Length: 397
Image (tube, rainbow, N blue to C red; front, side, top):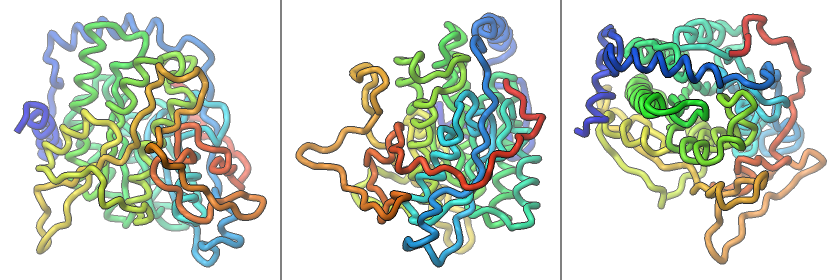
C-alpha cells in the first residue's frame, strides 16, 4: 500500500473509532501554517462578496409536459455542503453548481428535476448534522439523490481530519439509511488559491488531498460515491487564476463552478442509473484505500463500492474516470467555452429539440458541448419557483 493510501486509511480508521489529534502536520507544521494563513488572509476576500442566489425550483419543466418523463414524477435532488455547493460568488441562479447539475440531470434523465439547495457558505463538516436533519424531516419525503461538497473550511479552520471524516461519515450514513443516494465532491485543492504562497501552498495541497482520500474511504464504506475535485480543478485553476477564481480570489468564478459541475454530473446521473455506461470506460478495481489515494490525485475520478456478497462489505472499490479530457486553458482564447476536444473525424451528437423549451429528446453523450463548463443555454433551464430569502445565517465567508 502506498504512503498516500496508508495516511488516508489511518485518518479514516481514526474517524471510525473516534480518534482525534492535531492533524497530520505536527505542532511545528501547524505553527508555520497558521503564520502563513494570516498572510494569505490579508489578500483573500478582496472584492465584492455576493450572497449566493436562490436556485431552488423545478428544472426541465417542458419534459413534464410532453417528454418521455411526462408520466413520471420529478427527480428530487438536494445540494448540501459549504460555499462551493452554495455557489458563493456568482450572481445568477443558473450559474450555481446546483442549478447546473439539476439542468444536466434533467437533460440526461429526460425528466424534470426538483432542486433544493440547503448548502451554507462557511459551513464545516460539523454543520452536516443540521443539514441532514433538514433533509430527512422534509414532509414531502427524502430526495432521490443528494450531492455534498464539503471539506475546504475544515482545512482552513484546522479541524482535525479524523473529526472531519467522522462527521461526514455520520451524515452519509443517515442519508443512506433514509434511502437517498449520496454523491460527495471531495475536498478541493486549496494549494491553487492565488494569494497562498509557499510553504503554505504545499501544505494546503497536501492536507487537502489527504482529507479528500480519507473522505473517499469513509463515504464508500457508508454506501455513497465520491468524485475527486482536487486534480481536476488544480492545474486549470493554478494556470488561470484570474479566469477560474471569482473576485474574492478564493471562490470559483462562473467558469470554475461549471468545471466542477461537469466533473460531478456523470456520477450524479450514474447514482440514479441514468448515465449511459461506456464499456470502454477507463476503470479499475482496487482496495478502497488505494482507490481513494488514486482518485485524490486524479480529478474527475469516481469511487464507488463493489457489490457486496452475502451481506459482507467488499474490501474493494471501483474507480471510473468519468471526466472528459481537459482543454488546456492556456491555449484558449480568454472567455471561450471550455469544450472538451472531440475525436478526429467525428461530430458531437446533435440534440433533438422539442417545443419552445428546447429540451433534449435523448441524453447527451459524454463530452457533448451541452455538458461542457460553458453549459449550453438550452440546459440552463430557469427554476419555476420564485426566489425566496436565504437563511439569514447564510453569511458570506
